[in-house]
Image (cartoon, rainbow, N blue to C red; front, side, top):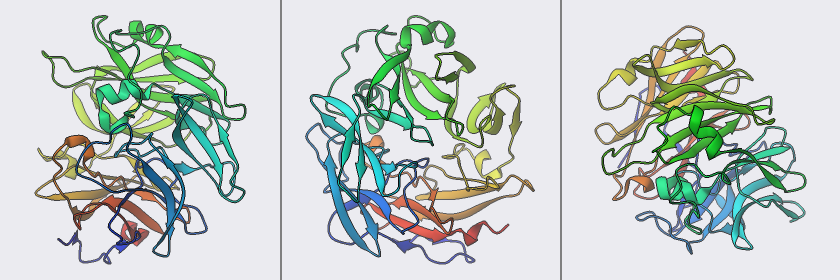
Length: 386
């Protein structure tokens, strides 16, 4: 099955080999490439079921069509992988999540020397300077959305709505030691959720200045309420925390700079992509006609390195996932291209495109199942000339 590519766009380039395995990178907000042309990826033998505790993902990179392996892990999922990424503060270094001594941890792996450093807890996000990580309970996430958690260790507080000994942990990436920064018991009273609700942190990211972080706090579905609501919360490394949007719709986001966030959310009952000043809480809505359709009202918000364009992929429409872009300077939006998609038997093994940018700024890369297997593809950033 071929992709639908607009007439002014060249055909995509498949980066991963055709060797019987399935390849994917993961989330849209992680550094997947380096200036040497290496694209990080996960390699697994299946794509038709959820991962289980003993399923191993091989970690490596592709370059010029060849795969080079450097590690394996059982701490992974299909949406975000093992949070594999290039470590921004050290050359030839990657980090990923792993299982060691009966717990999840993060490995800082020097690809040149082979040296590895381990943290005492798995990081869900790492600051751009490489100094700090923020850890959350991946077992609690697995119980909520298996596609974003890890299968190895169940949540010991599964029956507790807002535990005092779990929440967000600050990890010193130099020493590998973590401490509880803010607990669920502290979050709950200001989260906007009723005390009867069981909550968790689903997504969390440091700001570019490495001092603040934003997170999505969600309530677990119940027999009476099948879906979930979200509170957007802002914290810092000192333990301060406040709620920006309470008990509403918030999904994908991306930091623009140290104070602005591009985020898909609902403000005063109106859903859309907003640029939100996290200091003043002032919001500016972007007009993206593609998102006014009944089938698709969300994208994985990403930005080109210079911040000129918001770009993101949406969810399936008539068998395709479309990539759209919005020019923040002139207000013009365009649907760039569409990719045929395989409908999965289980929702959390779906293949979102998770479009992201290469380190040299020349390529948009994305995960795809358009050829009935998981692959990584690339298309020139020339499509953004509008």
